[in-house]
Image (cartoon, rainbow, N blue to C red):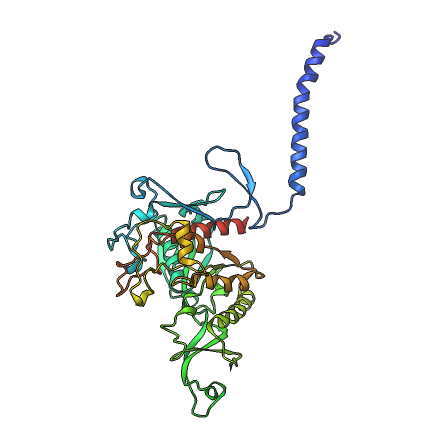
Length: 414
């Protein structure tokens, strides 16, 4: 039998059914051509970001450092948003504001950092552990980097309790999360570079001829031994320095000045600490670039601000705020033009920016977000003879620093 004849209407229906399919294939081809011709995205290039409230996703860079603290009305302890509590054993006693009964110890946690135009994701401990399996992360710097290190340790211990203590590569403290082979370590160093007491030689010398009798020898081209092996051990390093370079109580410019040495020879004429910092940063960036293991990630954290009001720490200064500062109060407290007690943070950052702008370091800019948080220091509950307006309560704002770290590492890996 001959095949049944097709009606004209059937042919029209078939052609009509094929048109949407052809149109869809054309769209897919155009999309494929666009994706293959687009350049690879660097960690700092624009990302696709959603508003989180069902609005269309917008293309544009996210500056996590610029934003505001907004109230988070949920009580973290009730809503499950508390990342860890006062029972985390790694918290230094003076920073445990919940255990020490700080007046606003719980209220200071009811604030969330909201960058302008995007959201900073909260660090998910399990995802962080999975993503950084078989990885070693080192924090190198002063006690403010220990503040950040402890925050991350406490967050991750809430998700994985099988932890072994050890001190890799000269670290002051360290932990390995055994189920993930993820190591976190803190290398304590005040100046990044080697320093120690110096006394005039009876045989004389360049410094002695200028009248120097004692001080601190600072070798700007030699890393402190506490972290010299860290670049060849860790996959990720987070550096900081700054507070000790502006510490006249330790390095008194008359009685115990910083005396800078380069290649074992005193720098003549002698440098003031800001110029010494520039020289040390230059040499340490070169050292890390040469010593860092292949594909290692290098980050430098900007300066953590202090919030002394009414004088410095040794002049009766205090930090009794119960809420974050307003933008106007921040400028009054930190403006370089005002040259107030807490100007150190922005001064240090000027040196960091100059040293890092042409380097391969990623910058963790935590200064702006932290300047608002005058309410989040241990204050009178820090266990010191004076208010502690420099370190941070744990839990506290340094948890948000680690949100920023996690976002930066994710962008770098992508």
